Length: 291
Image: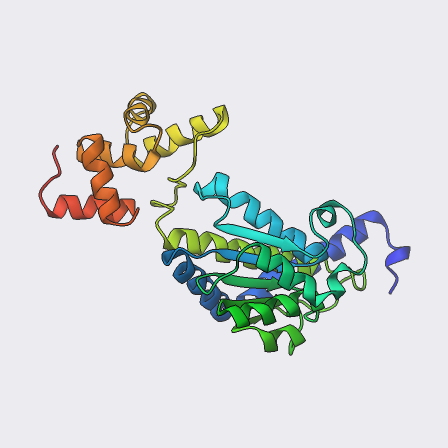
């Protein structure tokens, strides 16, 4: 209550102390977060998508997470989508009243051709945003699986979701400013869901982003380093095999590890649905590993 009387340092210390409580609040919901991640994996495996819907800070966090999937995991931009109440304008400017329209979410999801293979995750710190409730209601009508991430217990939105996730972070130091602890909690949950689900469909080998798309100089260098580390080869060898693999890090790794051709590596990868470790193990088991 005396925030306005504190020194800048005191304010920062109080904020930091409060922020330390967020990971524990997230951990309390790990079982529900796991269910959501598994639902997303199931959607991806049947050709479906992950779609976030939210308003304000929550909506922007969904957009951030969705936007970072293609460069990190080499996914099609359509695979992870995010809708925000108020549309494009709301990404940078507050669109007053947009979150109060449940029908708009239905329209927005229809525009994305929502179907029963998709998973929809609604984000609402308050747990009662009409835009999100409208989106979840329509998702159920279509047959899509749903989850909801809120920061209150017994949230209204939870009643509309197959998988309710209620991360209780407690009051904000600046009352009602849900971009603080609530925003941090939601970002942690989204990071966990998208990253674990991408690992679950073979986008990662060891702890490396092997589906990175080398579309610029920074990412070309990253791809070379990833291949080098994954295949335990020097960077010149990694670069040479990236050339041979048409700049596909997964195929380059398999070519080096198995000392096989591009076509063989591609076949091994296709046989295991894009899982590098499985592809290498299967080939070695079949006696195709050459020293």
